[in-house]
Length: 202
Length: 202
DNA sequence: CCCCCGTTTCACCTTGCGGTGAATTCGGCA
DNA sequence: TGCCGAATTCACCGCAAGGTGAAACGGGGG
Image 1: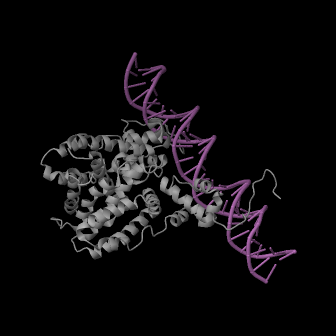
Image 2: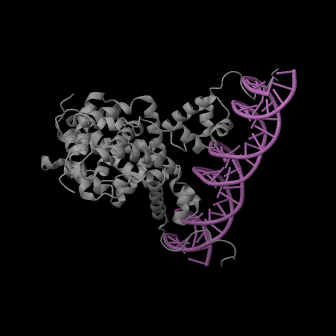
Image 3: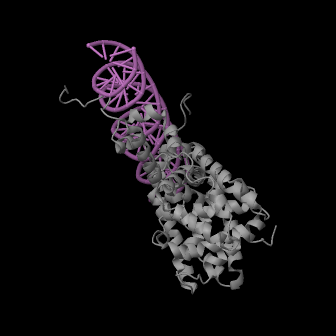
């Protein structure tokens, strides 16, 4: 029997879905606020759970962050398949891929969380750095036959990061309200240039 | 006479240069860490000063931030003069300007501070947003005669922000170690495209 | 039927933060 | 010379954060 005036504690009946709920709330919080801004307490509140339970499951805030942002954000072979195919449309394929990536939900939240947290959390910056090196640099440097492949891959990544940052964090109105197609049309030549132009200098 | 065992308090002799010292330390701290990460205490320590003095001068942490990041980061007419001149070299002028801007010191620290802080501090995001709209959108939308000038200006800004973020915060090795000229050579066509291509779609 | 073990909560500790108020020292002006 | 006001420090407050330890609960295997 439940004592009145005292909240129930101990195990709830039924299958435990709480862990997944916490992860969902964490992903949402880290995508909306910075690493420090998203507190364990706020995440626990959003998940309808005691803060101590979060620590119980994930050990620490850093552990929760790693679990919430866990790879893969994007199927590993995505970039590889993107590079194969008609070379003259390389830029447009990349542009369309990135624009969709920045809007479709599982990936968008994780990238945003990583970008937001990278500024204050070295571990987050390293996660994103590693991901870019492994998933973008890898395919690009091995499949492109051009000078300075790492620099090209880095510029591709930098344009994508800048796009997410400007739209989601700065809230540049021209980007938040832009339609998909004009955006792709303007971005396509950029990626095409990074991925195919012989680059006079160097 | 100085009582032993007790630190001196009260006014220091000589001309007071302390305020500027605090601002310098703040700029350095906000450029290196996020808004929350850079504490008043740490800034005061770096400036060799009591934390309360910082509050005394600037009222609050937000006031200190505003004072440290104060405009103008870049001469207001810079973009205007950049747009005039040989249209075929527009992209290269922008590329060179941004690459130098991201490396020369008064501007670099302030932009980095704003970018770092924008993720957690709405005021910082607004400052940077306003700056971009006023200094970049203004000249570009009035001087360019092309469809969707705001979107073009936003993409220019996004590539610059992405560049600073990828190099300074993520620390992408290909960017930190890149020479100036190849970088300019690869960036130039991007800006040229954003600022001149007729953009089939739209 | 009962007891073990994972789940969940509560109460609480420590730390570091931004900020306040008063005291102290000194430069400069009348 | 005397004193006002700016500069500077100290001691301290209140708060919210991350994290701890133990107790309460209840599902499921013996």
